[in-house]
Length: 82
Image 1 (spheres, helix red, strand yellow):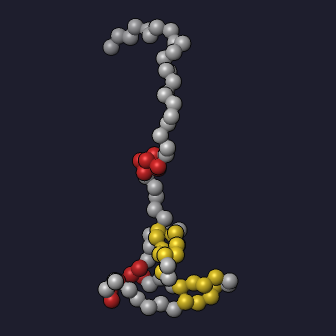
Image 2 (image 1 turned 135 degrees about the vertical axis):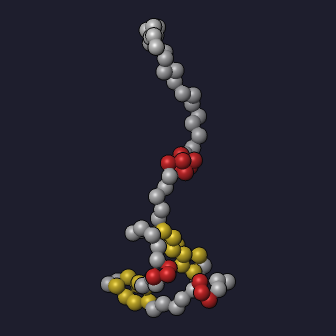
Image 3 (image 1 turned 45 degrees about the vertical axis):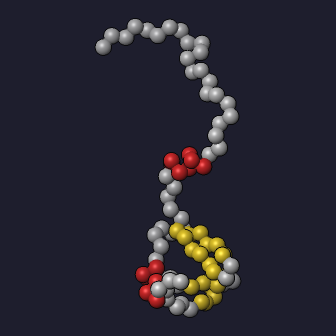
């Protein structure tokens, strides 16, 4: 259970057809979007963070086919002097 300093009582109000609450300054989330989900009788609100490329790539399924040979059909390389 959270300690008393990690929680605060807030008032719920109506905003049009939606129920809303004001998030106190000490609980503000970064950004302008959040994900809300229900876990039993609790609502969990998480900020939507910027996803890093590696985390996106980790979620992709593995490839079932080999990569094509990119050198196939090319002529011999030119002699290059450095």
